[in-house]
Length: 237
Image 1 (cartoon, helix red, strand yellow):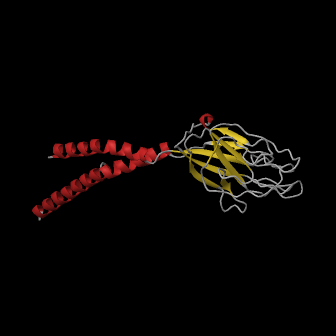
Image 2 (image 1 turned 180 degrees about the vertical axis):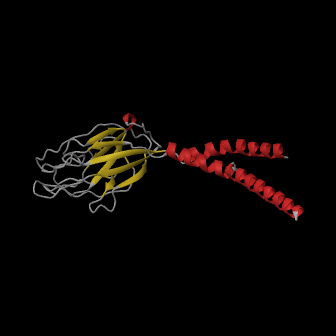
Image 3 (image 1 turned 90 degrees about the horizontal axis):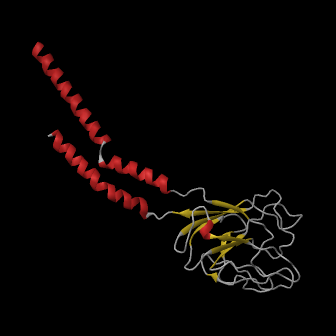
């Protein structure tokens, strides 16, 4: 009887020891370490708060109609953002808030358009190609003719950021070669009476890190994890 109890105690001790080894192996496994590394670098390389810049709804880079006098659009120097971006980088552009297209209309207009340019030069409002060094990028947008004179405003280099029904409110876009500036404005047929009663109309610009960065770091760490695991196994033996 005493012998049986001793055998059982030894068996339980071995089982406990094996369980402890398994737990140790799981907690120190390369998979666990890689997962922790992935989480760490995803947090470090994730999209930050970026820049939020107010947009005046009377500003435009489109052609004016008649004697209308629209304000200048928002012109963003890409090198002066909190995270500077350059051609070839990918950024996220989002429309925030809304604007009113007249003094009597509700504050619910959502249209926003953009255009990249090599320079910040904006020509006369009576020209159709006002952005002197405009560069083609992004999804094409067709802008309407002016209310005064029914003049064409559409030019090929601008792109849609946000449409009128809110189903599109932003996009990821690669900064084209040679681009140093981003022009942002509303799309409208008449700008003089546009306003933003609650002052919430703005654009958000975020730099998106290259997806290969965390992968390359994890690949560099993996050999050390593998070597450490082999050394632990050799020590246990």
